[in-house]
Length: 333
Image (cartoon, rainbow, N blue to C red; front, side, top):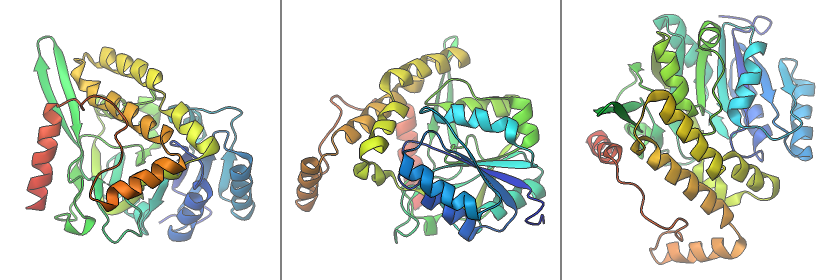
């Protein structure tokens, strides 16, 4: 195994939709990970107080380098800026709102080395690591593929979504149809072969997955590696964090990205309907996070009601939704 002076991995931290726990995420990685890595922090024009926190970390961590931005950028732009800077065998991309469980990186590297693969991802949780009921967001990714006339319907299934981590059935490494950018590790060889990301603020994970597979690389899940992002954090965002989220998930930009994604892969409109709805709902929730809205939602939950609705109209009912329900039921046993 590599030593601290000979890192085998570059950990690249990229803003996902906010900045408020940026430094906490960086500190945790250093605290719970073996010294087999160096780090690139893609700062992304964070607020001044967040920059100061990151600079304080870099001052005491010789392996940490900050790459500054003079404007807000989308995650794919920051990933692309990082690729030419990678000089280790592997690079692992981590969103700046993702907590890592001890052993996360060591298990990803072991999987890549032992299985001779160039793309490995962990299990993704959608709760805090400290949550006693740690629920899975995605384990091994599955895709629905159907030929419809001269085009394709493609959608993703978040297998084991909602299932407790402790109830995941086994620890075997498995093929995965796709990864999420929450955390994913690539070999430098793969990054050089596949190249930079396209201009997509959504579906960028599926687009890059298809490109990785087209280039002949395999994707594996390493279930011993676990990371978590707390979706409920959006309720607490204020100021620049709130504004950056609305910029990052801009509805018009998402619609343009979906158009490009469908055109590129010859897909029917239904392939992106669910994600466009998600973007609208996600931004709607953030726009509604004022104090009175939070108070009203607490009262609604106390009497058994859900949070206030944020998007008018019904979510598109697609085949992937039904398959998702079936996968969850099957996982629960």
